[in-house]
Image (cartoon, rainbow over all chains, first blue to last red; front, side, top):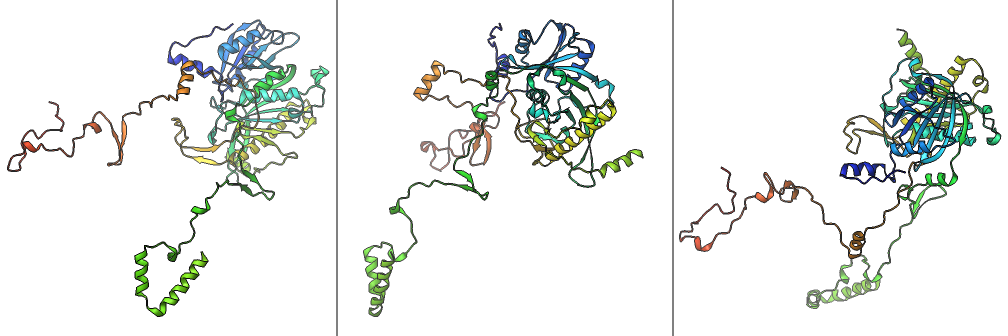
Length: 331
Length: 188
């Protein structure tokens, strides 16, 4: 469907190469799409969520007649055109009021998606105005055992992490720890996935707080953390879920060879915990070994030797001969 | 000031958090995962305010734990490496790689098949000639980098030794002829 664009200059080639598959990927970009019946509440909700994804998000303004769970092809097309692998689709119907459909793509095809119905919503504008700089990495906290036990909630956790984590950085400026997104769900998740009754599942509480640090008297280096809610505040109810196709997921989870940790050979850790390594030394030529220096064994020129012997007196000659012999034996 | 008193009380509050099941971290993603059971009574109650207070205190504890862990990471002071012009000074911590594996957005790149020329070059052992290394060259005598060409370039050095033509020499031992051999003519 998409025509292959051939780059006409170096600039467009660079842009194309940036979008092409890479070993280390770019930060995932997102889109917010409005359904045909998307109301003002859902629009505001998406705007508030988008605030924490800036600048890696694009907000569509027009309404689109799309039903993701029936046919997601137009969303796949949007994803490909905009190089965005995360999409939030907002809709509102009698059966599913105020619903956000979150979906992820792999290779511009739907990987997985789920519906979150908004039960409660308090907009950012309703909270005390506390600014958080655009593009800051958030602290993310998940509380509740259900995020580890229930497969659908695991998907929600994975999607939220993917969405909000932002740019991958190795050095963090401590001034950049500004806000925390806290996602909680009560219950232990001992509810069958296939029961189909999603109303029994616990609601997901989504809160965003600004972090304030205070000097602590107890410990000098570690500050006391206090939070202040900046919104938005959501209570979500998990709706329909479309799990990832296992083959596609397997492909998506593959780690390229360049990034796989290299196993260090010949280094092992002892039972005690000591690091032990084997050094492989090459074969030694024993004929060319360098032993201790023994001056007497040095090969001298014959005349020098004879001169020395003549110099020495008779009495000592015998003594001289003895030690020489001894030296030879030591060899 | 009321703010001072509240600051004082905050200062005495603990910085450690007790949890039944220890939390797990993903510092590369700045995340904390708490699998402790939540208070179902508060969570299912209709009292909104009580629930919010509980959620905030829970989040505060998680944030405190995470901040404690982040501050325990090795600190790097000074500018960020990699030529980032926006960062000059600052206190940075070196974050580890993220531990939670998240799906990729595009498949792993496939190595492109070698072109006909590339195959030929590889077989013959032809390597690309070294690109232009710029104008600077290391001068061993001076022990510094000088320009190869251009203003005050090395190629415009006046030779420190100029051979004399024996025939041109006079009987007196004086030199004749143009003494400006090898020197650069100045522009008028």
